[in-house]
Image 1 (cartoon, rainbow, N blue to C red):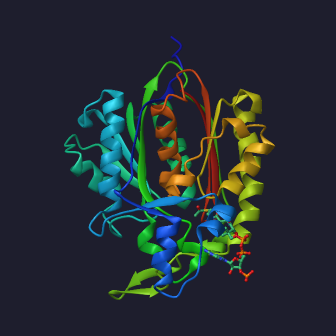
Image 2: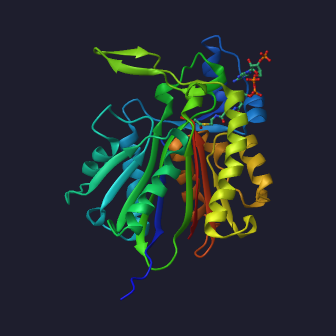
Length: 328
Ligand code: ACO
């Protein structure tokens, strides 16, 4: 007897943004009290960012992940205990260990003993997590997988460094992926090149009861920009080729929301400028959370409809990059 193919379908999306919204103007005023000069005009012109959200002092990545997950479960019509695997993509976990995914499991009240682990691929984390979840589902190992991106980048920003602190924000996004006989994820492609680890990093670790090295984000903006534009176009074509589709088959493009100039450049090369979902203007760069946040916005406002092809693309520290093409 031949077994029919198993696909991974997105059956629920959810997102969460912390209550504190900070506009460029408000951030510029706060930074001015430290003697740091920036402006709404500079930030908008170079990045497209107008505002970002910052977590409350006692709010963690797992707290935000849980809120996003509850909304995705609700849309999927599932109880938390029906989840077989939880994956959280984050570079700003609550602790060194246990994983944020384990904390999410218990905060959701899940007692079924489902597997839970974190994925660390910085801003490509959500693409990495989706591709990994897809493999677990297609192998028949799991039926319902909660894939989350959650970040509190505000905790690793140096607010004396205007070249980075204006770029990032906090938030979480989630999807429920479910085994189905209908597509589903069509293809994925993941890559990394560790030789570029120094252009975007938090080069510190915990040792002997203290942080050794730096606990703030460092970025060589121009090096990141050049590499990001190059690899994003390439990986998009790789995912399309694997699925046997042309770029014209993409209905919605959801790039990692880092910088409007990088996003537009990639979308233009794919002929998908009109099909790009943009939330970087209101969210800033939320690293692994940016793609599921944007996906949830476009699903809930009715832009993304059942049967349409969505391409997500991530690029980030590592250096890592990846794309996942799926049918809603
Ligand atoms: N406000 C005002 N002026 C600023 C600011 C600021 N916030 N930051 C830098 N400047 C100044 C610089 O000091 C410099 O001044 P100078 O000419 O007097 O020396 C001038 O602006 C230009 O600086 P550049 O660094 O050359 O500016 P650039 O055009 O490269 O833009 C930026 C900087 C926005 C960071 C750009 O390089 C970029 O977008 N890089 C990619 C960053 C990115 O997307 N990272 C995330 C991807 S991966 C991930 O998400 C983790």
